[in-house]
Length: 153
Image 1 (cartoon, helix red, strand yellow):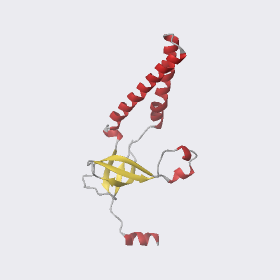
Image 2 (image 1 turned 30 degrees about the vertical axis):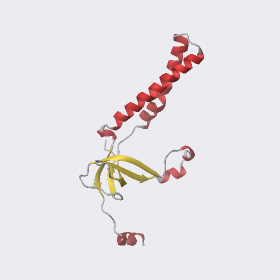
Image 3 (image 1 turned 180 degrees about the horizontal axis):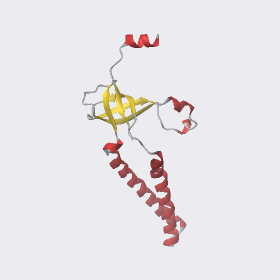
Image 4 (image 1 turned 120 degrees about the vertical axis):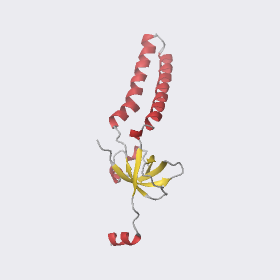
């Protein structure tokens, strides 16, 4: 499956070959029913690897190949694994080891913290995988003001 390509703007180039790029929030966010609970800012920022072979400057428009992310897999890692770990460890400590509910809950919360820590390390290793990072493919030509004026007028 081919990865989608999007136009982003270069924000920062100090950590070459890792470039900070940004893109405006999609227009569909305005009509979203979850807007009040959403953490998406007006501008989405991410790191991308410069595969274009060109020196980039802040403000340039670039063509970026973005990774395909499975929302089901992400939701399972964020919610499914911690929930199963909490319930299983709670049952194990209370029913299996005969601990009081308070002790079982405290130990289950420690297990939950360990699961979140393990997921954090997994996420850091997963993010470094070449197939899961954005890549800058090309620098788009800059449009001159006279061309923009003709296009809008």
